[in-house]
Image (cartoon, rainbow, N blue to C red):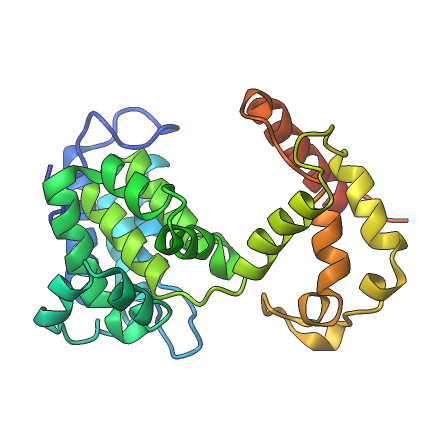
Length: 280
């Protein structure tokens, strides 16, 4: 399957999809996603607000939207997108150099350079091997990429999830390129909490329940008074900048053994439902 051509097949229209999706609808989605892939930037403004076209189109397809409905959504969404930056061809080959790769991270002007680079890598190796190398290998660059997956309210991770779910190497390439040009505001939390856990020798002990960790946040005066409604909704807002050490110590108490993955996923879902739905 091509790393530069999007080709949703009737055999895979999403993990949870309605039945009897028309081939004409799939063709419409493929055409739209290809144009989005070739033309548009992952951010539609200079504040890093996200292009959601891929997410909308694939979710709509799985839910049984018609071609006219999908086309109407496309007309609405493409109206405010930005074009991709100009490709600098010499940068594509230079991204194989680890130091140059690092120097381009977080710079949206390199989006198309990264996109073509990851397309070529996936074409040679397959996206599974590319993900292992550039995200999960624990090298310096992989750590910088892995933490960026969780930036900006998980947008890169969501995009990657769609690429894997629909088995689309071109969308995986988009996701990796998008990840690379995000800022790394959550890296301090992920790597910092990991370091805090190691320093406290907590990585092998029993994991605290998530609800007990939320109670620790609430009971910590410095964390509790670190933010207010006027701070806005940015990721790197006051709790992270005003009380980082306290937050990292609390977050470092949460760790998951691979054998507990299902259990801990259920715990996170339940605690989020509780946190959002229950008030004093």
